[in-house]
Length: 131
Ligand SMILES: *[C@@H]1O[C@H](CO)[C@@H](O)[C@H](O)[C@H]1NC(C)=O
Image (cartoon, rainbow, N blue to C red; front, side, top):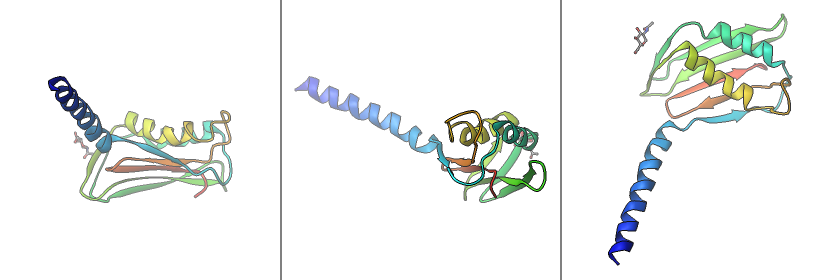
């Protein structure tokens, strides 16, 4: 009986400890899976030129940037902080986040990328080659 109680307490602790940080930090990637398809290299180059400085945003602030594949093809990167959140994103972190919907969507090959976004409960990073 004591062993069972101990086991139940242990299990509850493990579940609680793993659930709380997961709920706060989990990033989810959403793929558009539609629209024109672009080579990964073009998208990575747009990400590299966007993520050059630390970006600080708070409370619903947003940064939007149009990027041009050779004109007339354009896309958008936009990143935002959710209400009541403050974020400070280094160039490396910006790169990592924007690459997620690039590398984890349209995984059939190196190219044919259609973009998507990654979000957690404080921020949303969108790479949309079709906007
Ligand atoms: C952004 O935030 C970081 C850490 O909070 C700070 O060190 C840096 O000076 C801020 N940069 C700007 C441009 O506000």
